[in-house]
Length: 146
Image (tube, rainbow, N blue to C red; front, side):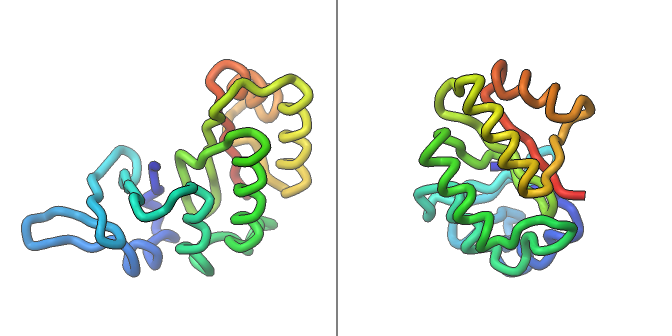
């Protein structure tokens, strides 16, 4: 999972990501390595990626029309159940998902409508029309809140 290095994530990193004297990083007792951009964090102590929102708490969401971390926990949990959606990227104002199966056109339209109802924008230059193609071709969804 790629976790953004945005300054707004500082409090999360301050609480969960630590550095050893050997310049190694760990998160909640697990190893962490730098990625680009952001920090690559492997949370081995959670079974479902949506559980990350339980850890983030007040450090994520609740502004710019974004759902709170608690609300997003239940949304991501439902999307995992319905669409086999797993979080692959997260920052203070965006989330990326990868689907574990091919979605039908109806499912893609339904999911895009759900994103719009969450006041989320497609995190690509072509808006939701381009995102539909990304969802079909790459089995991924990227949304953000402005």
